[in-house]
Length: 217
Ligand SMILES: *[C@@H]1O[C@H](CO)[C@@H](O)[C@H](O)[C@H]1NC(C)=O
Ligand SMILES: *[C@@H]1O[C@H](CO)[C@@H](O)[C@H](O)[C@H]1NC(C)=O
Image 1: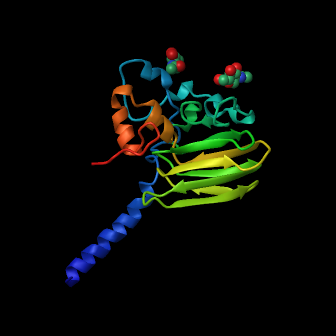
Image 2 (image 1 turned 45 degrees about the vertical axis):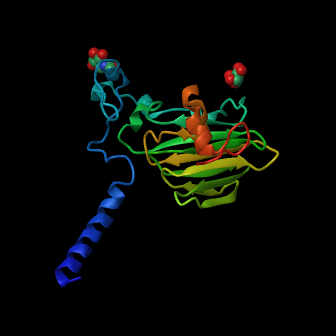
Image 3 (image 1 turned 90 degrees about the horizontal axis):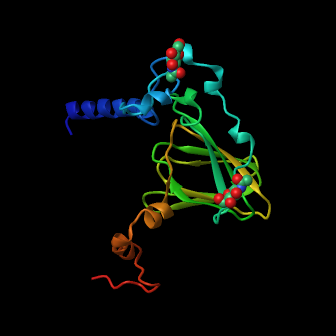
């Protein structure tokens, strides 16, 4: 590599390093407030995010929610439930690039493998003890026990899960660097979303056929 190429490469690398933090989450805000105006989306208008309410229509309540104060309803087969506070619940979060959730677990309950395409998650264990883990795109599993008071980070977009590893209920609070992180459940994406006429895709992908391995040509 000649001197000029080396300088250009160094400059390009420095530019990337500067740009990376700006691209790590939601786009930056351009004004103090942009409280989501849900009503304006009732018409034909469609855009990436929410338009801002008129300033005279903004109230303190636009920045408030108490939904995290109560446990969610955990009457489901997996034994966990998520209560989210995102831009769809708190309009004042619009353009601020963050949101939170509360997760309640029955004893041994599981928050099944899922991803958040738009956010890194930082989970704080409020009560109980969890086994928390994520899988990289290289297929490497990072998992460990996180006791009350501990935190664990799930990098943006990676498949992750938690399991209550105790015989008592557990509670966690999660923070996200997106106003609407999005959640894609692996089981729902693979099993619930596929109509019957496409089960051959799953049979081949999962190598199953009535419980027996499928012969791959
Ligand atoms: C905003 O306030 C104006 C009056 O200041 C009212 O006419 C309008 O309906 C309000 N819009 C919304 C979305 O509440
Ligand atoms: C909790 O969810 C279950 C199953 O969806 C439902 O039958 C039950 O009524 C719910 N309980 C409350 C208190 O909402």
